[in-house]
Length: 305
Image (tube, rainbow, N blue to C red; front, side):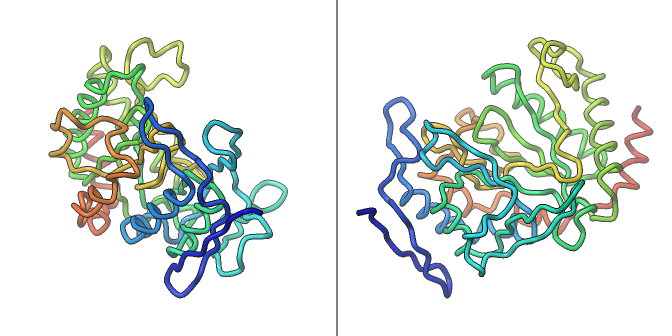
């Protein structure tokens, strides 16, 4: 008989099936993490994570047999999901996609029960799906040299500062960092993507020994790839505080610019075990309230090129 457990999340009680099932193996023989561990983590981190999820269509990375088994990427919300989970119908060529929207802790817990390890969010919100309120730069190193990532992040942060744009850092839980820029939502994806590309090209032109914007891997060599491809309609980026499907359960975790100097910081620095502790430091405090229109930044960037 399959074991079940119930978890209270707000006013709702969510059923967790097979809570003892291992979803994430230990890293180098370390602790394994079960579905119950995943549920407990997402329940604990919810108050920090939900502001980054509310109103955003999601693409869900599901591993029903754990990370050692097959995975599938889920855009359409299954019919068997509870009625209390919010959904949004998004037009696509030839029809629509019914995306899940995670607006509360109960939804987050249910997604953990469904072995949806990683949540990938849109850069825009319901009601203004064609107007992003985020720009994301993905710093993707050629190998595992985090020193290269650290250097690239500093260069990008300095340039964004010159453009008078606020930005936040986030470990990806994989190999690199994301630099996230809040924007006003007055611009379409074409405009934000073009701006992000011009910022990346400006940096790559200044440091061709270290950085590249070449989309093809064979053209990058040992340089770090400044990836801006996520800045497009219906594209997604990993959500802050989401678990990554890797041994050891690393978490995509916001950090402060000052923490970038910490020699212990790397792309998988935080895991299920300690990401909530980092969340409590609120490294992005006030960032959402500092969103900027791109017009002044565009003029400053053009003056630099």
